[in-house]
Image (cartoon, rainbow, N blue to C red; front, side, top):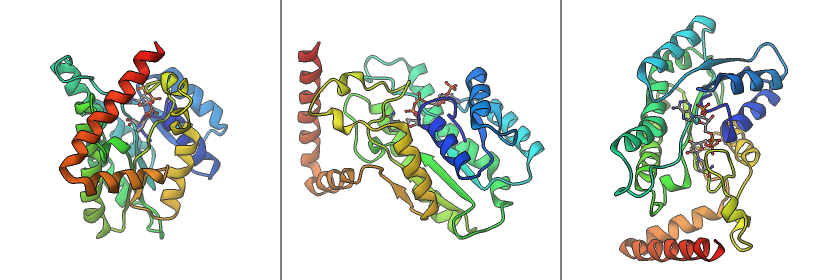
Length: 260
Ligand SMILES: NC(=O)c1ccc[n+]([C@@H]2O[C@H](COP(=O)([O-])OP(=O)(O)OC[C@H]3O[C@@H](n4cnc5c(N)ncnc54)[C@H](OP(=O)(O)O)[C@@H]3O)[C@@H](O)[C@H]2O)c1
């Protein structure tokens, strides 16, 4: 599982270990991976340091995994970073890093590990690939166009992969969480707003929803179900959704500025 050193990934690693899985934790920060594996409390779990935005690093990770196990029941592509902000202010390097970390890295991991996934004994729900995208892979996030592009890309990749992998009995699930309070995506400002704080979830809630999604063979997990209503409403509004989203962004900006 990628992005295991903090936030949602760390919570998923714990949830999977509780269910009896052997966890292979990947991320860049070795000390945190070491700590996680110790916390998981069994010598069957292990880690590989890997930067998913770097092809050579993903190749080395895949080779190490292939050297230590003959199959993978579940791949969780979760590594991600926040967006580059407003397109006029972001550097091209930031844009590249967001797309490589949030989208291309997950595609590379799926490609380079697919033989091990293929080699997993087929059961009703496994093997499976789980991609952690975002609700902003369904609903554009104004002010974060690059992040939105990376997550729409991940949702599109997951849907096409679902169809491709079905012939090979590999399940594909895309998880689209809303707001989650984590190191990379701190929600302190939203948590300080009485009306909006209820929207924020814990990483553990996302982890449980992800595991249930795999256990029930869901193609998409939105974690908070009311997001589906928002999604279908915006879809039904057609071109008017852009005005609504712009109005919503103004409202949030105003609330944040007033609070400061
Ligand atoms: N928090 C939210 O509100 C929210 C909402 C929807 C979707 N998501 C998605 O959920 C996923 C997890 O995010 P999070 O909220 O749990 O944030 P987080 O706590 O910052 O975790 C991000 C994880 O990704 C890893 N990572 C980042 N860049 C990497 C790279 N180049 N190579 C390998 N690993 C990398 C980080 O580990 P290292 O730094 O050690 O490499 C860390 O383990 C992301 O894909 C994010 O887009 C988050």
